[in-house]
Amino acid sequence: MNYETGSITQERLPGVEAPPSRRKFLIAAIVVAVLAVVGWAVFGRGESDGAAKTASGEQLAAISVMVPGRTVVARDVTTTGSLAARRDMPVGIAGEGGLVTRVLVEPGQWVAAGQVLATVDRSVQTQTAASLAAQVSVAKADADLAQAELDRAAQLVDRGFISKADLQRRAATRDAASARVKVAQASLGEARARNGRLDIRAPTAGLILTRQVEPGQIVSSGSGALFRMAQNGQMEMRAQMSEGDLQGLRVGSRATVTPVGSTQSFPGEVWQVSPVIDPSTRQGIARIAVKYDPALRPGGFASATVTAGSASEPLLPESAVLSDATGNFVYVVGKDDKVERRSVKTGEGADNGIPIAEGLNGTERVVISAGAFLNPGQKIKPVLQARKG
Image: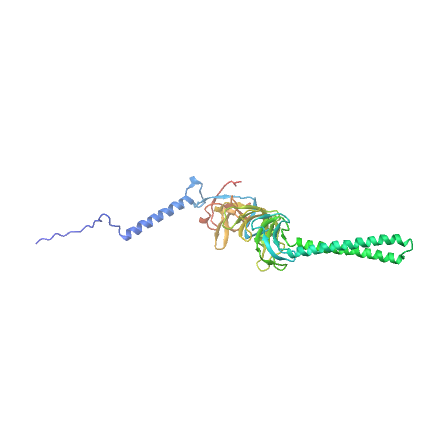
């Protein structure tokens, strides 16, 4: 029996994946190609794209730089705090109190100065005032009688029918009666004034915030505040700010207040800056006045952006400012076109860039792109870009 010998050729069937070793090779080749493209885009576009070579033939990367100069930048401070009435006025019993018969206002209602907020029963006080009014009438009658007797005695003393001493006694009786009239009138006026203070009145025009009294309640001078109101409806935000932020803040500084949970913002201005700092929190309070709006509820929480002055600072695009574990930094092109790392302190972000509070004076050539691919001491070909604005 004859047997044929030969090699067996393995063919890949359709739908069968490549061996793992070949798949890894393909992935590695793709990664290398991508890195090569990126490196060429950043550093290797050749002399036609602005790259340069050193004397030894080493190719230099063309990197965009700018001299930022200095720009006047508004210093905005973001803070939080609580909303409150600018003048929160407690309203209580001014008189002796009693039984509340009616409550005439509700929270959220506007009232005028002197308007009655609640009435107190005055039936007993009314009778007392009537009794005192009667006493005034009696005292006036006695005074009239004493005056008449004095007039008759004055006519008889010249005829010798009565003595001058008797005339003086009658004059004293008349004066005493007149004094009793004044005492009775004063007592009546006091009673009427007390009765007038029984009603609870608004001390000034404003907005009723809370109501703590109901009809049938017995109130007295010890009952505390029965109403709370905002004088003239004026509102404010009491913003908690660090002592550093308070340094540049001035009365009249503009602010924008946004209540928590709302997308609506309200313009305001700082009307008072705290003269003291809390030693435990190292913070002070800036009071921001805002016009009344139903969305501004005293006791609520809000955030605010306050313009705390302005400063002349270098302004860089966001791409120029890098950061790592040690903080923010930029690359500056120094002597012999070598890049140097410079630590910087940034200010509040502006619409057209990032202000640099510390670290630059504005005359340096600052790398504005590709900084993440550079190393300190690396030599580049700087391409100066015009400063915007």
